[in-house]
Length: 81
Length: 146
Image (cartoon, rainbow over all chains, first blue to last red; front, side, top):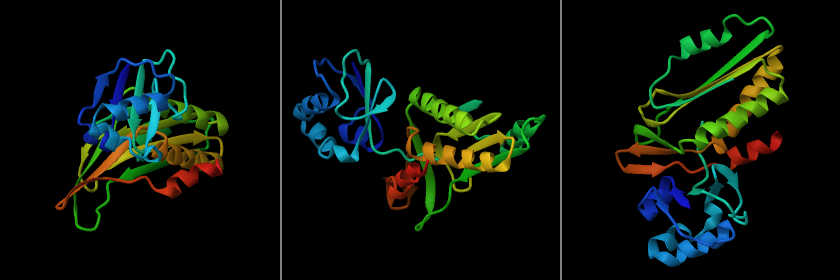
């Protein structure tokens, strides 16, 4: 699936998007896998209360299932308006 | 209902006039415009990042909900992204309803939701560097009144 990063999450990880091969069942499982990859991921995902997640462009929670998901995005709380 | 996400400036006067023009069912049109304001230390620019695709669908969902809740005749949301200078217009909303109370409330609802539920992220550039704008608790709390 495609994993996207925005704002300071993108800056901390260093890339805007990547293709990830994963069997993760939930968003949190995917976060655990990413944390294990490299230090920059562990730093970006250190405090998930500071993060929001969208699965297939719909806001959701970290315990949301990933079955069939094509796109997961991680970002800080939004600041539109 | 119209949703526009663009980096180019928009003509607020022309948009507001076109939105209000020819209304007969609606006795009330409310518009709100957000402008880049200066900060302590002097703002050099405001940079707005967004999530193409999700931005449009989130704004459409938010506006559709406002249309339904307040029985609006029409709603307009324009939101810019990219690099903006102090004094530039960031976004506008417009609502058309039979009565002003509904038009005002729906406009406030649109503003409250697009502040914290539409995927935009602001970064302030000053002489000291650039910093992401932190989301404010009051913006999240504002959603509970709806």
